[in-house]
Image 1: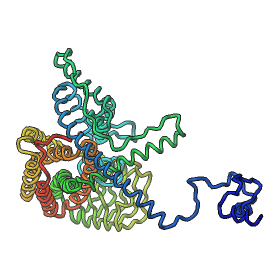
Image 2: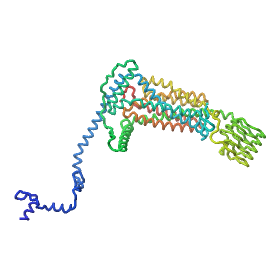
Image 3: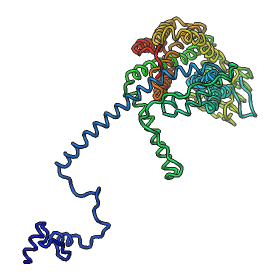
Image 4: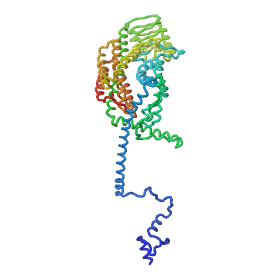
Length: 572
C-alpha cells in the first residue's frame, strides 16, 4: 500500500481520498532540500535574476518578439522627426511675421552696437600679435625687430618705459571687454528659445523688443498682439537635476555630460548630417579667404619695411683703411661700415651706434663709456688694452674677435635703446589705411547683397581680389604697395560679408552657432598659417606669396558657386 501511494504521488496524482497529507514527503523535494541544506531565504533566486544559460531557441523567440517593437520605435522616431521639421517650417514663417510686428528700432540699434564691438574684437585679434610682437620684443630686449613699431612713449622711473605698443594692446582689448560686459545685459535669442521649447521665455523677450521699439517711436500704447507661437516638437529634453538630488558633483557631471552631448550632436549633424556638403564647401572657402587675406594684410607692412631697409642700406657709408688717433667721439654713428681701420687712444663716450659694422679693425687703448647700440657688430677685430664701461656691447656683438688685456665694467642691464629713433609710424599708418579702405566695400556690399545675391558677391569679390594680387608684381615702392593694399582690402571685404551671411542662412537655428564656430576656428588656423608662410618670403621673393594668394582666391571663389543661394530663403 505504501509503495502504491508513493507511486501515485510521484507521478503527480492526488491521494485516493482526495486530501493532501502534509507529512508525506516528495522524493524530488527531499532531493532539493538536501542540495539547499543550510540555504538562507536571502539567497533565494527571484524573478529577474540570473537563472541559468537560456536555450538558443528561447533567445530567437525573444528577439522575434522584440523586432516589431524596435521597428515601431524607429517608425515613431522618424514620425517625430518629420513632425518637428513641419513645426520648424511653420515657426519660420510665423516668426517672420512676428519680427515685422516688433518693428525695427532702438532695440536693433543697441544690438548692432554690442555685436559690432564683439566683431571688432574678433577682427583685431589676428593683427594685434603680428604688430605688437616686434615692439614688445624690442621693449623687452628679446631680439631685434622685424616689423615696424609705434612714432612715441614715456618713462616711469629709470627702469620702466611705457611705450605705445602697450597702449595699443589696451585699446585693442577694449572692444572685447566692453562687448563681454554688454552681452550680459542682452536677452537670449527668442528664436533659439523657441527651438528649445521655451515658449514663455521667448514670448517675453519678443514683447520686450516690441515695447522698446514702440516707445522709441512714440507709440507706447501699441499692444503686442501675438499670444501663441508655434514650438517645434522636442526630440530630447535637457534633464535638470534639482539641488536636493544627489551631490553637487553628480549634478555638475550630469549637466556637463548632457551639454557635451548636445554640442557633439550638433557638430556631428553639421559635419556628417545632411549639411555635410555645405560644411565642406564653406570650410574650403573660409580657409582660402583667411589664408590669402590675413597673409597679405600682414605681408604688406613687411614688404614696405623691406623697401625701407633696402633704401636705407643704399645710403650706407663705407670707410676703408681709416686711421683715427686721440679722438673723442660723442655723436651718433649711423648706417656705416668700417673695414681694415686702426683706432688708437680714442674715446667713445655718451654716444649711440645705429647699424654700424666694424670689420677687420684694430682697437688699441680705446675707451667706451655710456654707449648704447642697435644692430651694431664687431667682426674679426683685434681689441687690445681697451676698456668698456657701462655699455650694452655684449658678447654676442663681437664675432670672431680677439681680446688682449681688455676689460668690461658694469655693463648695462635691461633695455637701453632709443625707441623714438627706432620707431616707424609709417608701418602702422599703412595698416590703418588698409583697415579704412574696407569702409567703402562694406557700404557697397550692404547695398547690393540682396540685389546681387550671396554667391555672386562671394565669387565676384574673390576673383576681383585675385586680379588685384597680380598688380602687386608692379609694386616697387612704398606708395605703390600702399595703393594696392587699399584696393585689395576694399574688394575682398565684400566676400567676407557675403560669406558671413550665407553661413548663417544655410544652417537651422539650433545648429547655426555650432557651424559658425567650427568654420571660424578653421578661419583662424588659415590666418595663422598665412601669416607664417607669407612672412617667410619677405626679402626673398614676391612671386610665391602673390601666386599663392591668387590661386587660393580663385579656387575658393569657384568652389563657392556650388553652394545653394539663400537670398529668398526663409530662415529655419
